[in-house]
Image (cartoon, rainbow, N blue to C red; front, side):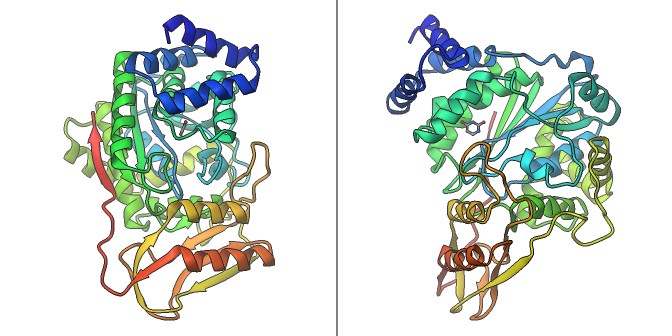
Length: 419
Ligand code: URA
């Protein structure tokens, strides 16, 4: 397609002048035929300019953003944003809600009583100039073409297309205005890119697009064959992120958060090489500076937490049911997609845009890939508010946990980096 043709399609998506079924047909054509790099770049820019472009020049310093391509149990934003802000690198994080089996950062923050995810622009600038961090919901005027196209892709099985994912992610990042961007490209069953080859291609495409418009971009490929951390579900994930900022998080969540934070510190000009940046991020975590920044950000956005109690004052589900191993063995598979679907079934995610979610429900995974389990050990705990669903979720988890008789290596978390 020529640049003009691409601009025509994007205009038609944004202003509704072409019916949805025609847009679906176009999305399906892109899905099957792919796009060349020039077409992907033109599509990204046309989408980015379909709405407002945020001007962050009122905020002092190098603004660094982060984006994950979506996964299950991925609560890294809640750890990474305060860590980086604690080093005085300003972060304006505009996030979305969960759709399908993947969770969304905004839904997670909304499980904090009183937390406001909407701020007008002046308030946002003031907050970031003062405390360096804010996490807000993407407004409707930011890349309206993506909002519309994403909803159509979601119901026409055209989400997992590299040109469509790359343009969706990068148009939002370009419109959100940061000078530097760290991308977390997920690989595995719980991700939209299931294989390393696809994830590499997506990462390379997005890095090229970003560099082409003068942004600094780094992409980290990370494993999403099993969920990240132990908690899946909104309030449960906030709890785990706060535990992590206390230095008591699961090792995979801590490692990925420190890796992403380190790349952001490098791009923000705070360190000149990766190992030093990683150590600096660890110091910010262990000294409690990241936690203090999280607390500052939560209270600046109206949130109320009680840090001295175990649940931090987050909503808790009425029913907690254990899932126990029926035999001994080593966990060799814990399919992230299936866990995400089960959490969604409990009410942690929405089937359709606009569905109400239950912030308290979810799944606590007590065993991960590589762990040994004896017969009768607790594999997971289902947090639910409905007796019937808790039983179905328990049965599903029983079959999602696959056990082998021989020891199994756990899967590597950080697969590669693309610059
Ligand atoms: N995340 C996005 O923002 N867009 C996609 O298309 C997929 C993941």
